[in-house]
Length: 235
Image (spheres, helix red, strand yellow):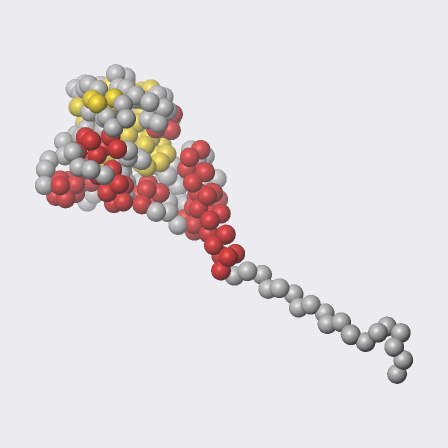
């Protein structure tokens, strides 16, 4: 019997740290009690620049199962918040979630919008050069969420997947190398997509069309032969 997914911790920024280009709010730590979740994220949390946060990236979720995988890979513990996540979940395939999937947690309704795109600040945080590239290549990146209905969340809340689109494109697919077939399904699904996700899907579909055109150029029609005899030539 599959266990009911639940929320292990709710994490907000503890303090700012020097980052690769500027200060970063990646240092998240668990908080006790209920936490207010609004359209812009958790109360008390921070995003330092425009590349972090916004409605489509209001909340970052990461699965305990992916964290355990990294513990084996890195030979160290990966406590809640180490990767900068706001929500650490259990028994929920966050990186395998379908784009557009909706979760009910506490009184909040969240929608899976896109994968986390890790930057150099993650490498600084972990202390491994270019770790953010390695992190992304695995597809175990976690999900950026939009707050469809604000409310309160707290550690221990059960998580219910209330809607799962049928296009089949997962968070990890977008992170680790989506194919044109999946992107076409995503675009044809009719679900509202984040601007960056829609642009990426269109770009990949167009690239495939151009590649196919280059491999199979249209045949050049045969030119009609012309007589070389003078028009007024006599037999």
